[in-house]
Amino acid sequence: MADLASRITKPSDAPAEDAVAPAPAATEGQGNGTEEPADDGVNKGLVETTYDVEVKLSDLQADQDSPLYSGVSSFEELGLPKSINDGLLAMNFKKPSKIQERALPLMISDPPTNMIAQSQSGTGKTAAFVLTVLSRVDLTKPTQPQALLLAPSRELARQIQGVIQTIGQFCDNLIVEAAIPGSISRETGVQASVVAGTPGTVMDLIRRRQFDVSQLKALVIDEADNMLDQQGMGDQCVRVKGMLPKTIQTLLFSATFPDKVMNFARKYAPNANEIKLRHTELTVKGISQMYMDCPDESKKYDILCKLYGLMTIGSSVIFVKTRDSASEIQRRMEADGHKVSALHGAHEGQNRDALLDDFRSGRSKVLITTNVLARGIDVSSVSMVINYDIPMKGFGDKEPDMETYLHRIGRTGRFGRVGVSISFVYDHKSYEALSKIADHYGLDLVQLRPDDWDATETKVQEVIKSSRARPDYAPNALDK
DNA sequence: AAAAAAC
Image (tube, rainbow, N blue to C red; front, side, top):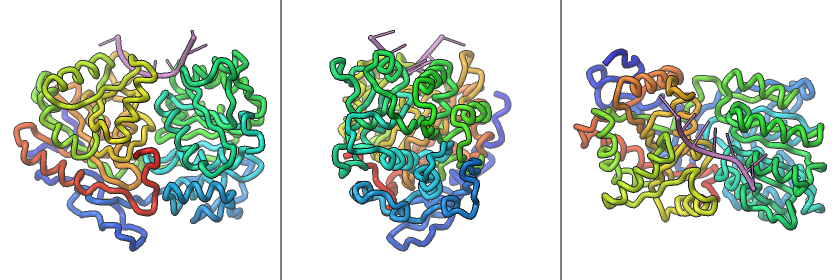
């Protein structure tokens, strides 16, 4: 077994309590019950992250003396309509997150300016673009489409639709529709001012003239690096944009923007303001990242079952490579007496909706899935993410998929909560892939050993049992 | 050799 990269800590190199993630930075002194994070390398309670924000202004808004540049410290300063502020209060959003402080003034100001924004998972990107969209909509034309939001999966499009409806719940006559397969009436077409959808369906609706795009003022691409990069969807996003008004305000959001995609993003959203975080700040500090050293592939399943008790303390997402293995693991686990569900693209849309709704509400607590849920899905109760298969990119499984790793583990640790990720490694290839990921992000991963179950339980429980929401950010209003 | 996304 060759070069296990130095970033992965071997038991001989370090004590069992080795660092999980960089020690969290000091809090801003809210004094409202926020626990001081423990200093033993394991995240407990809440984690306050210090952000290193880089802002590059568009030529159109290049006045650095402008208050737009320095950001706001409260939602009130944005001067949004009362109905929107009431929606924020109802969601328990009391104070803007970092990305919201800096991006919102730039996005809602006139003339509308494009934006490319990169911010960690669970830091409030969705609310940032939702507020912008709501600020642009003329509610006196409730069925005239004015804003379009695109996402890479059915689930994410529905989730965004839900957030818009929740924040906009006091906006009279606000109609939001999801443009996903089966959701728009063939008779009437789109009858909403705000549309959240997936690229294929949106394009289809426009071609059938069931979606009047002539009055669209804002286009949001969520998970933009994924949307613009991939052959299929990148193509579709370009074609959709080609059918929209030329002056549309384009907002691109993601937790990751690899360089080559960033170059394309700048063409897609020209003259954009750019906000991004430094490379080393990319991983979410509240997530204790671990790896399970499995003796061989066949043992992975048994180890997974052993983890079931820990998985159900909160909620857990298990990521596997293929639809078939997701279903197969579900079948076996159920036969072994565990309650789990499996969600992937082979299932009917309605079935997928029901499965995710059950998971959100806590009716189901363990969800086995593919990369379909790697990005964007926000379920606040998720305290554990398992990479049953390490994410790889390309056909030959040659390279680890850095971005997907980050997005997957970002399903936990949302809004300042803590969470655990456990990546399964079992052979040279999987070791090496995870090592590269650890190197790339500068991670210190904690090793878990199947033959020392007590230590595993202790390490995982310590984190999960202390997970709870920050008081000043929104707990997810979509979760029941 | 995969996932996703349209009819």
